Image (cartoon, rainbow, N blue to C red; front, side, top):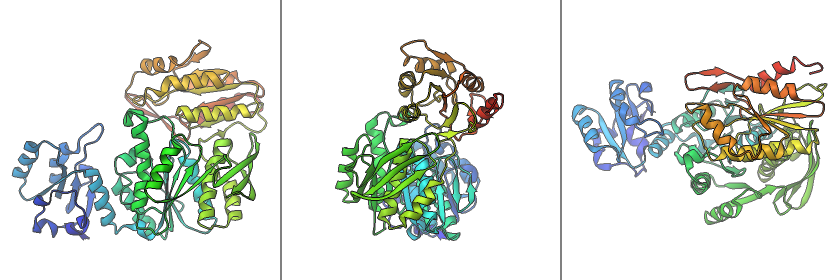
Length: 507
């Protein structure tokens, strides 16, 4: 058990005048940002969220015996003063940034476990999950025990941990790190989403390396514009700079948009940077040999020197690029490259260009998580490279999310697919009519179908498919649910596609 003074030592974003000698001596069992989780000897951190305000639940936290309340100094003063007057036995401390305070105290609560493990964070619009799985395989080839934190699932070794976020809240992250360390994990591989970075969830983690996959339009419902989106992503390198680790490495896709801005930012931080990509100017690059519906193969070069041929079960040029970031890391950290190449060859990722049709099926059906303009373009361009007769795409856009990308995705579908079937994704609380209307603005002709029911849309696409066609079911990938205004139902694109295929001979 820690004392309050242990958790805030060296931290200067709190209102010192409210910190008494008595409060410094308070024993702290844990920290919570959800009042329902508060118990005796807990600190409750009131956070202003996107949809709710934690300050509304301060009294609930106190009733659950919170010892200390951290509140936002921008909160209504009369409200806070009334609570102080009512609960004189509870310590109230104002913070300039409660989310950051939560991250700092969480790291201290668990004795900063990432100081004792090797930590790699991956950020970017697309490719984070695939890169994390490839990196996990590469590290395991050297007999390391890995903790994986990301979109599909969180894992400590082979054990899974449930979470609803790509990057959990800071207290939850530090709890995972603590459990990982106690289970002899040597390496942390984590996805760092832009929202998590902007919301300080990734603060006070001792990173060894950071990988930047790419930056294209997404999450502008939150970030507003690309400038803020880039700023959020770049924060990862500031956090890397602040890390206590001696060797710190930034690994950057040389072909990403905003590369010059990223490069200059890292240069100002005086961090070591290496690049990867299909451009021969990159420190680590590939010359592609084969891209087909069964595997991808390329030649791997490190700093101008041919190293080895690489074969992947993952399909598409974009996955070649994802794998290069891992090989760059492996080379820089002196892993056995041949063992790494052998390990990453076997990697497959759920809902990432995942072919669900059988080998005897006369056409290909693939499920993919592509839910951004760039990722949809990537999957359709890669499908074209397989020289099909036709490309059929099923896609939609999530409700309550970036509306600007909707017509862009329609124009991409129109450009690269022969047949587009527009359907629902996760509707959330937005009207179907609004979502569909926004998407349809991107079509220049009426040569597309609109089928609201996603299952019917998938069945129609597969029914439409002929020999040598490719059907891409885009948007949800690994997800096993669909969100509606009044309910969330089980829905798995892979399951539905296989059900549709079961009605077709040879599939």
